Image (cartoon, rainbow, N blue to C red):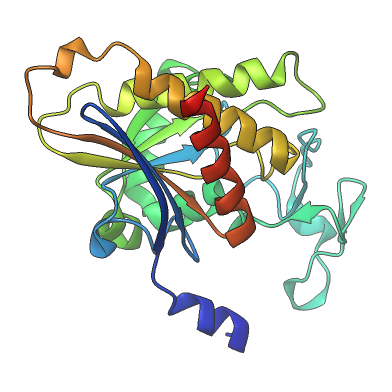
Length: 263
């Protein structure tokens, strides 16, 4: 492990911003990893929103893939393009280089890796019913599987963001991701709970950071102000917590949420 990664792994999540509206709370945090350093052991959240794909296949079909899409054409076997020592320098017509992402560098890749065989089995059952159990803009629920992911979270809410440059009405569809995911996350709430959310769309789906922040801020405030009469008689709190890696992005999101609340 590099010195930089080792140092980041020891950094605790830090609360940057918090806004309250009745029994609903929106928070912005910085964290070295929303998958492995933001869940129950850190006292943050018990549910994670995972930016997935329609098939809930994670990233296992690709050794690497282009940020912003489109989805690479499948090959019969990734191994035919592998180089000595298992290093993949070219496959499916794409060279390794800037603009390419690896499974361990995105939330979805880590979720599938750390969820283990139980998560994969649960997803396989869903695909028997529907080959695309999580269409763009929609959400579905699974457990957190086993092992490390289970140590961090109880449940995973999968939602599929659109590709910014390859899908129609990407900002509207991204808003639908937030709406669908949060509605599902709090559907059966009985106690105080927190839902961890990365900055949807800003990773593999290729949204410019400023646009992803704008959609996230508007979606968070819309959720805060939406009708929550179902929970009005309860003393329990509904909390969403954005977990971002970069301080500047966390600050920008905090300012955007604050501005939206005052609007």
